[in-house]
Image 1: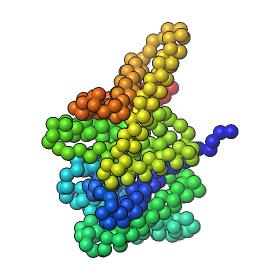
Image 2: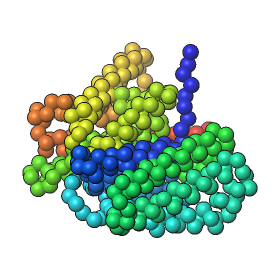
Image 3: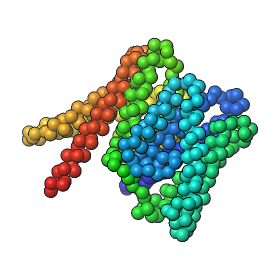
Image 4: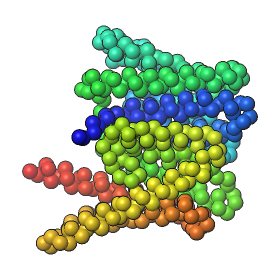
Length: 395
């Protein structure tokens, strides 16, 4: 009996992960404030900036409203993502992540709230529809108002007592999860209401995730150079945490796991949610999950790389048994690119499980090379899309 595939729009996936991150933060702040757990504040700020950036580059949903996905919007989203990544990876207390996050939550939340009230296609139209759309008004309004409250706490953490701050963050996380639930229900009942990202950027959401992951890999590789010569500190827990969040998004949105693509059954979604929770904890609390996640990430990379290599070898063997045909050069380039990625993925996983065999500088080179090859893969996929559309247009 076939398992029913669960459908979760990317917008809902990102909101669910944001809700998990915020709820986890609120719960963990109680032991943090009691002094029983350490706390990496910029790891949390960086992770939230990454989530804002993902909404921007994949959906055109900026902190100030929906915009067409232009090259400028894509560039700004990637810059915010890079700030978030560096904030996570380098545990140096700097004000930039807090300032950017304050702008996203404060002025951004106010702009979204005003749009909700006055825009013709928002609360006024939703109120006419009634039903679940009235819940959408309440869900959006609560998230926007609470985001402004969080901005106030970012500006001055003394506004509330520490337990009240934790409670406020938990309430904010619950509001985000409620909004995700409402949007998921609307998507199931009215699939035609789904908004396709507009703009002149012709990248699919999967290709945007490839771009995002490649930049993350390159940044890690670059950061590891000064880290290994003793110039900068490095947060291994945040590196692993962000990797787990990336795994989670790909699993929840596309069924793309580190070991292959699977139908989005509820089991796959459950693992995606667990990965998101582990990633959030690892970014917020230093060192506590590093031994576990090192093994998890290492094993998943090795399995993913080996399984993909075996599939490629078997597919190549089947092709050689067939009558000789001319292989298009573009497909050859795609094969070589995927082969290189699988080898780098396996090598990175091995370096995680067997520390010391590969030096830190070499690991940095491997990760940077992985990111560059991913960028080249994106280039090849775009060329294949162009060729495919040209072929279909000629028919």
